[in-house]
Length: 440
Image (tube, rainbow, N blue to C red):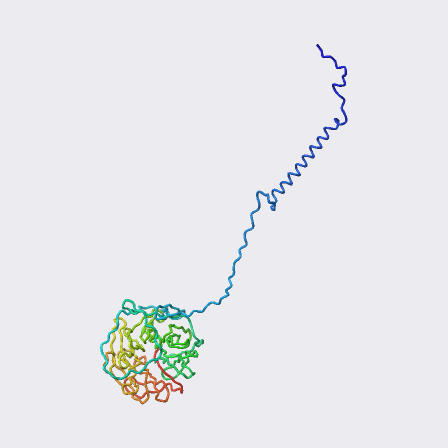
């Protein structure tokens, strides 16, 4: 059966209004607008997320590397100047040695180690009173370990240049007979000079507004060891023979004196009261390796090496008078050389080792004598009312230079060592010229 026909056919398909006519266009426009808005919002979101300065950026740029700043330290306290103490480095206190030396010879050699007390081969029967040698206040004695005597010194030795020596090199003339070095007060205080043995070509080597004396030439004639009190107490220095390159070797509160080079030039013997009384010490030529050679309770002074370097002659007040002794630097045995009732001082070994020259007042006036190292054949060399002292042998052993006041003040004279010919004054300045040493 067919459905009944709608009596109102217009209800099946109601007529379109104007809205229905434009609806599709409106929807399209709205869709496009939404797409544009979405794209704009997405772009804005991207800019925010990936901006380098955005706090929500998941991939922030790496931070800049830190700036390196080098700190500059500014000291507000001056650097202290600390004087060394022969901790040798003391001696260089009589205790341990430090060395500084900066400039100065490079030295090699075998140190001498003392392990026993020296023994003597003779005794004195003289009743004469020993002449006083020093009046300075003694210092504490050195440390002794296991029976051996150990001394330490302070050097420089340091060893670095000190003092105020002449800075300009002094031309030194060649001389087949060598040179004499000596101390003179012609400039006020004592200075060190050098001269040819005939008295010519005199040159000032060391002048430092202090007392510089007791000069000694090295075996090669290139350096001079001497004593100076420029820093308050006598210490040992070395300087080139032309006056340059001065170096301080010892640094103690004691009195150091009378340096003497060993024949090989590697060591320097000297006397010091760093142990309380004066004893003979030996150090390397650069101020290191100080050892104590004599250990007597009396004063041992003025060392002089034998030409072969095996022994050292020295003067000692261990008897009622001062006498000359020798000590074997290896065996440590001592031998008494003089025993004449006088004060015998300033020994000087001849170049051939056959004799020792010295000064003696055995006739109540200081004259020069020589003697064999075994104590025999003592010979008087001078006989003058003046005091003749401090003998120094020529290189060939035929002449002796010495100090004498026979012209009213101390001057330097030269005499034949064996003939007894009259001495010749080679330096007769109105000031005192003293303590000659004859070397190359």
